[in-house]
Amino acid sequence: MHRVLLSVLLSVVFVVAGSSAAFALQSGGVEIGDLETGSVVGQPFQKLDVDIELNAMEIGGKKVWYPPVSILSLISSATGGRAGRPVLVKVTNTMKEAHGFSLSAASTQTGPTTMEINLELAPGETKYIGIPISDLTYVTSNSLLNYKCQLHSAHLGGQLLVLTK
Image (cartoon, rainbow, N blue to C red; front, side, top):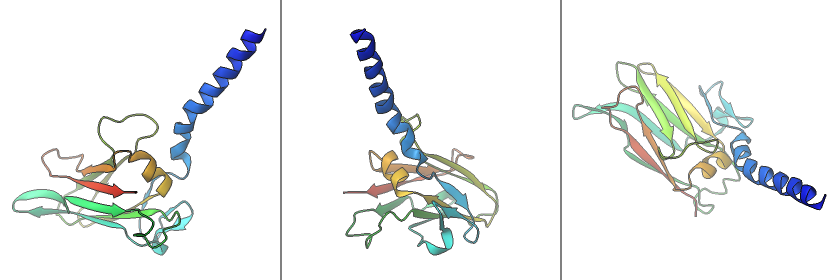
């Protein structure tokens, strides 16, 4: 009897411990939209400052996401008291054809605790991506996210370095 009770209790502990990571990204989730209509965790995009601005463009005959490296400082002294305010990323396609945008953690990560954002931008189109702080800091264990065009593998992407300490 005691063995059965002990095994049931241990099973419950393991299930709870294992599922805590799965719940991490359920705090609000990534939202994609327009400045006028978009919102993330109940905060309209219009009321948030743009933290990172990325542009699809052609430089020296190469199609790239510019800038190739972006730094987002979430250190409390550098963010002016962010107090859980979500991160807002502005992506714009300045080219004359459709372009893709993909933002993800290292390609070796999989599972419920990874972040994978994929969207397609029409020529001249701008979209905003709202990311809750809890979701962003949870998936950036190595402090690095990659962005690229998922539609065209020859296009050059970049990296977003997230400073949290």
